[in-house]
Length: 190
Image 1 (cartoon, one colour):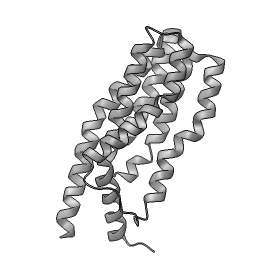
Image 2: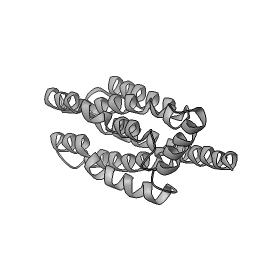
Image 3: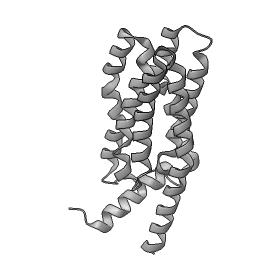
């Protein structure tokens, strides 16, 4: 059984070691933006595949940034480690939906990615103790949907640009929040 103090310490460790998830927002924001730019130079199917698998570049970049911005790696015995890994990997199980979207109409890949990403962010509101992830998840999903409905077949790059913009807009706020809660936690733990 874990008591509230232990849970708070485990949550602080997650936020401190990951810089609140900001490195992932920055890395994925960058790769989504680059993919959106490539839309204007490459065939749609090629860029749609790149959008589907841009995480192959973003994930290592995010881990690299995490080590630069996080204070220390997460403790090996942190009871939230398995949960945080499962939350991070939750998007993988949605890959079949993105593949189906690609096969039916490649122009819809970004909006499906936004819906998957939006849902993926919601549990991070609890993990990092901030409503910023509720805002992020909702804004990404609903905003991308609105762009898709409004722009129809022209939406592809603009949904990616929008996602990138929202990620980059929230990244410094998430990072600042992580620093504040972990700093406050270290003060109260002393």
